[in-house]
Image (cartoon, rainbow, N blue to C red):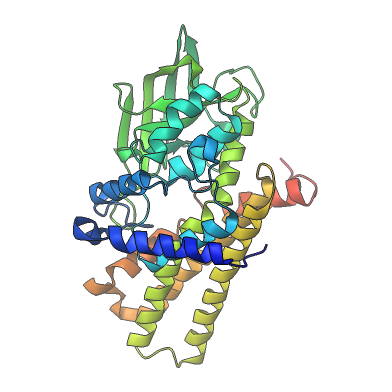
Length: 385
């Protein structure tokens, strides 16, 4: 990793900083600091307007190749944009699923027609996406997917249930992992389909979380339809495509995620200062350890981004690391606040604690990530059935 900033890179930094300061004004000034884990309900319409402002200026798809409508930005410039975005306290993005998960997947596996249809609306901030992977009996064991897609002429008919579907209530489309050959072994016979959410065959039921908010949802597909050419990759080869999407989620996109983590850590440090705890050697040690841990997350994400080719199973390192770190941050917040955690002014940090209890479960539990790393990276024997 070479993070040397050339004069040209510093000029790019100045461009980004100036644009953010110029555009986070007026009505959009109220978007500063909004959103993030446990807070995705905050002013969604305002943040969507901000997403479209980013799209108009060409800041979405920064890392995408120019021929796909992106800027083809170098790793260094992606880092610069992330740093300046955090410095400006810009809001959490509303289309992480589209830009950082589906977009790279289509660039790697999609047809030209799929790229032409779906990439431009993501770049403009006009179409939002959600991920249809987990099911009641197929969470970390993703190969146990039971949702079925049956070919009917020029369409696929999808029937089944997905759960823990983040931001489904606002999504226009969902990338769905469904079983298209029920006679094939578990990891085979799966296909990766793109399905419109606004149709009679789709029902969304928000799940109330410990935080009292509803970022996750149950999604029921009851004869939902999508075009025959909506399969990404080959029919019955969806497992390979789905794993690639997970690798993008656990690798590259974590750099943007860490923007929010940094804000949360700053809030915990501020709370420790306010309560006079920064001089306590135990608290101070935990704060410093947490700060170091966040820097390590950043360097691991940069290392992942520096690699060539499609991300592999090593990307599980990222999910395992950030989930464990973030859960520990939530616990630190409660320990710093003590009984005052129940005061209204600490609502955000209280939600941080409640939300992060699930971090080591969703998106692949810590146990599953360790198994993946042991078996697919280190070559250790498989866990007994």
